Amino acid sequence: MRNTTDYTPRGYQRHILDRLVKLQGTNVLVELDCGLGKRFITHQLVSQRFPNTRVIIVVHSSSSLAETVDYLKHEYTGLDDEIGELSSHVPSSIRPYVLKEKRVIVSTPQILAKMIEQYPEIVEQFQMLLINEVDTLARRAGGRTTIVFPWPVILHFFREKWIIGMSGTLRDEHAVFTSEQLEIRKELLTLQQHIPNSQVITMDEILNTDVLEHLEPTFLTVLLVSDSKIRGIVLALDTLIKSTRDEILQELDDFGQVHLVDDDPRRVHLMLDRLPIDEELKARYSGLLMLRRYVFAMPPHSFLRQFRGDFLSHYFDIASLRKTLPRVSSKAVKVLEIAMKHKKTLVLTSYIAMVRQIKHLLTSKGLETLTITGSTNDKGSVLREFKENKNINALVMSPVGERDLDIPQAEVMVVCDVISTTKTMYQKFKRTRGGKVVILVYLGTSEENKVSRLINDILEKYPWSTAIIQRGQ
Image (cartoon, rainbow, N blue to C red; front, side, top):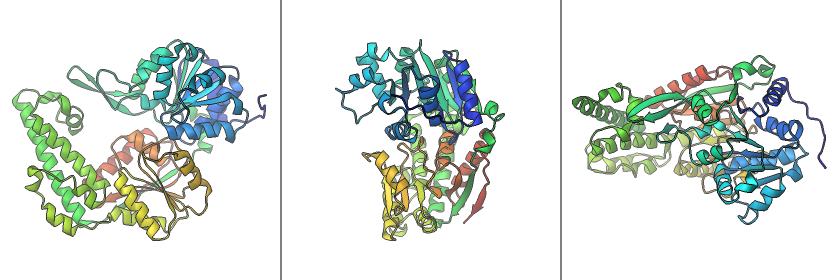
């Protein structure tokens, strides 16, 4: 018996739900900023607006699946007996039964694709495919296919069904290769190509409702970390990267192919594998870029292990660096300083070595600290422990599963390093649903310019989330 408790949507949520009802049967892409209730809209769709429709909800990670199932079952009642999940925690022998018996299925794309292959007649009985974080379908750099596996299989199978995709970020671009040409294309155009005849409900449309009353501002603080040794290493790498890029451009010019990159460093990086240049030059350029990323994001003695080969030995005295560089990252020390001032701190960092060092540093100072990495078996239980246990002071996460998580319990988020993809970083910043975000940046390095470009891009593409930028040491 379905619980008929009435949940009252906010004005902008009602606007979206009403539009979806009017567009029933027409594919729709919904742009809704982080923290504005995509899960609540999902719940309303499957429980109130279409209570008899069989729905498959696809989420992009196992941690997101755990949170979504928990939300639909417990945050709002009424769907307990109707929800089933297809995840790595459900034995293969049980999955066909779940598909047959449950009206609403939450699945990861990989397992759904397997079920389509093994039990197409069962999956065929579902009428709606609801895709969470639909922007993740688009490849950052697409060649033969512009969407990631296994989505070509899934979208082809559901081509006659009703598809609804939701995301907080539908304004980014990605690289699409045609022959040897590179096109920087709007991800939205690629999604509409693969989800044909789709209508778009944008944030621009939603801004005409009451949504501004419910937007939580995110306050970005760029904290400059002074470390003269790291600065020296980065400046040397910057010089090597530029000189190697100049060699690439010169070789392209010698063969009349420089038009392929238009003298644009971003195009050099994106097209590197396809450029008609010496393979050693390609490997050196990509290796130097990765080394610089390691320096920004890893503890010193971890990134030093990557400084190998005769080429680097001409420019770096590795033995001397190993003796003089501290074992503890200057960024890790800043994390400790910040965490000591707050009851709950969320830390995002790219590499497991940094996760381990930060945890060791925090726990050595008496801060109860949890971690989530790719090897964490039950990410959902770790998240719940951080949220509900007042004695837990910090959660340190690698990028695994961090995107579609709600962690408003954190008083401050510390971001130890950034990548250049605007939407990914924007999604990270919004995990705490507004509040204070501190981005750690090495003073006097190219990381400052990288972060500045990133923030400017975010402010341009997502202007409704007010960000007050502060800088300090």
